Picture 1 (tube, helix red, strand yellow):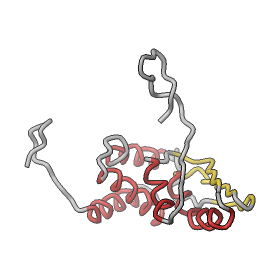
Picture 2 (cartoon, rainbow, N blue to C red; picture 1 turned 45 degrees about the horizontal axis):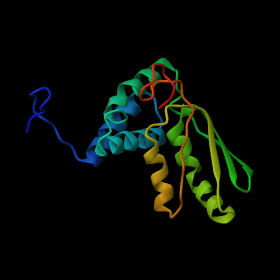
Picture 3 (cartoon, helix red, strand yellow; picture 1 turned 180 degrees about the vertical axis):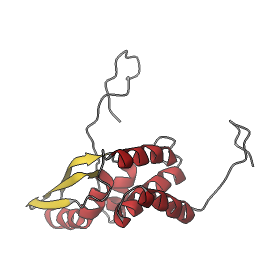
Picture 4 (cartoon, helix red, strand yellow; picture 1 turned 45 degrees about the vertical axis):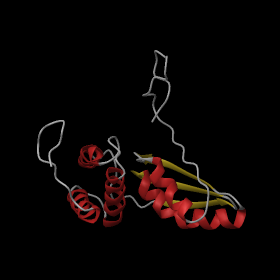
Length: 166
């Protein structure tokens, strides 16, 4: 089979093989085992789901940010229990997704016991596709809403200025 856009042969890998390859790349560029696992799984899952903007294309940026020291690939998130239905996570200059992964069990427990839970992550970098963040909550029988702050990138339909982040 060939890629229609480039006429080059397409290469297919299983998701587990892709995760292992991405983990290896991330480990060689300074992440801890746990951060590499989370980021590799996130990128491979986005690629599996057909995301052109949050799959493999993100790896170059991850590597660049790790090599430059812009992001701490070994950061261990600090989870603070801030109330019966609130958790605050300091990602300690690491990526947001590993911080979410670390706090998810507590957030699920709080949501079940209090009826809701707000999980706020700060001091973090690139989160990735939000559907992958909320799916584990849905799989646990909960409803979840993921939001992020961002610089403006997207011009709304009919508009002339960037208004929305991504």
